[in-house]
Amino acid sequence: MAKLLNKTDDFEKFSNSSKNYKNVWHPEKKFFCPKTSDGKWDCPETWVNVFDSRYKEGDAWHYRWFVPHDPEGLIDLFGSVDYFVKELDVFFSRSALDTSNFLPNPYYWAGNEPDLFAVWLFNFANRTDLTSKYTREIIKRSYTTGPGGLAGNDDYGTLSAWYLFTTMGFYPQSGTTTYLIGSPIFDQITIYRDA
Image (cartoon, rainbow, N blue to C red; front, side, top):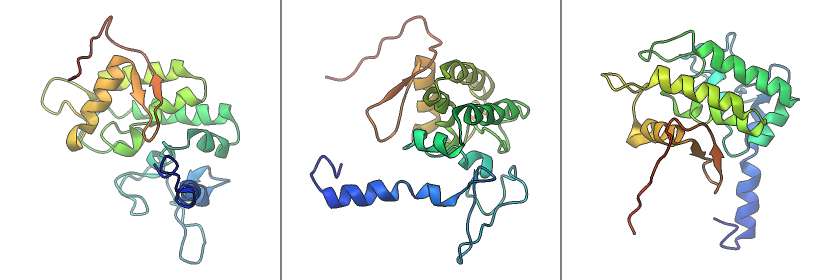
């Protein structure tokens, strides 16, 4: 917005601050970790505690992927595309071990907003096949027509919107004009818009 309004100072300020996530990336552990007020790392002893107070409504695995505005920068932090894909694949494959929608999943949790874009990160690593594989699994496992058919609080339609976009085979990258291509579950769709 600032760029479109020719507010160069604001654009530079916000562009620079959008990269601050790199300041809490632990380069050896390859996770985001809080720091103490004197700049020391305060990493959790386990990465899979969804009730760890260092993270809000999630754990280190959830927030490890939450850089929707800079997927390329996130991939760079992992050191290689192959390692990024391997770790993202672990995140999704381990989430399948917990089939409940009742409690938070310590890996991918379909009801947690920081996780919603994670499956689409495979697209940025040229592994759209894994986006397709895991979106299909998530739809099958986490969305039903019965009671508890959503994996969490729909928060003004957030989970429903994820489901609708994903089943249609595309998904918007927030803050951009980019739509990522996935694997639709329909043979044909028609979208009607008000004129």
